[in-house]
Length: 256
Image (cartoon, rainbow, N blue to C red):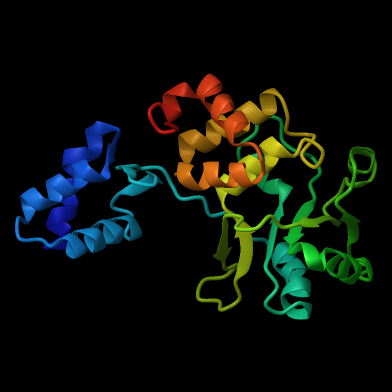
């Protein structure tokens, strides 16, 4: 029965761009007039969870063929994560490689580095742990002159404080592996690049425009998550203006 409903929802809403909860609820009630409010809430949640519909922002949905962003985790990144995961058990962290940005930009990064964010009270301890390793060069929230001069290879790790409630996801390197690595969602990557011109000095101007354009075209974006994180970085109004001025077709009626 659920597959029949899925097909009906997809067929009905596919050409509508995006639609709100009230419109979706009315359609589901027409299909099942006896449905209760609690069952309706559960069904909408289930539709999102099973990716029949995609939540653009709170209370706004779409039928989308765009992919969810799942970056590739290399063996090197997995090894790198073990230091913070094992030596600092239960510590909230987020780790990724700027090599991932090559999936979006026009001029490919010839060299890349790792970004490791941890709870602010543990930043120096984690920095010291990585500094003692001869395999990596660790930098503690470096200034612009250090970034451009020394952070230039895949053995470099930039360690920064993690902003509370940063949007993250846990992914595994191998199928059925129990080891999970905490990495940023695409929403976090976009806002971090937009907000931090020092760390991401190589992805500014037209290159940042290309990054956002390809991300918006190819991947599912949760704008509630994106804007909420921008607000925690004190960039809410700036990012809204940037998106509306440069990508109006993608965000029309979404950022209101």
